[in-house]
Image 1: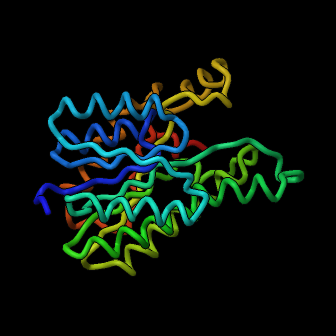
Image 2: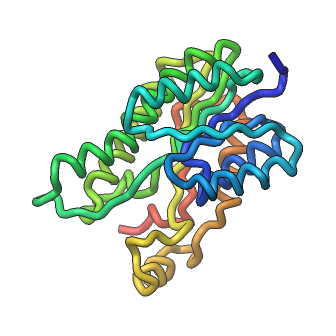
Image 3: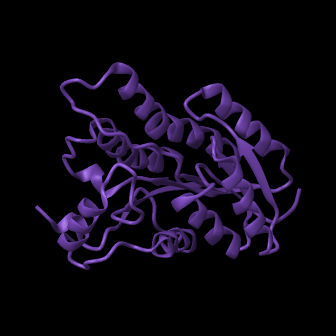
Length: 241
């Protein structure tokens, strides 16, 4: 077993997940890069990270299936690096009307955005015998009433609550925190006009860079006296009524 620590990031092929693995690689972690369907992007990201001189392992899994989560952590057991960091970054956002949202749409969102992080955290904590850090990626929308995104908002609010529950349960050996980004990368669900309108409303009048969000992960790794907290990085969006 190597002394070099391993970090597992779910949904790490692109967008914020990619920024997290890049930050972890810069800090010397071996990387287990999880993806669901973005195989080409995952391979490209892995190639980029290897230039930093750290080992990178790829794993494809549908995290809405608990058996696939078991398989993902079976792979962790085969990697010759001790698991020290888990970043639950995989998530899906979908619009819907609370009056007509189907059971399937509701379950699909909560299975990926809330149940999967819980199951991954359970598995990770069992393996972090020498201590570790679990990061749940939530959203500033967890504290807002986004009626257009009911399942997403509820799942992220639940994830913030889960962060506190697990931080208390896993202490003192494993710390559990959350990062709640605001506006970072435009979603396909939002038009350019709506994106511009949202940017103009927030106090800092610009979206965050992915590096600014990833730097929160680096901070939480280095400060070992923080657990059960959600670090909000939203340019002041949460100050709006």
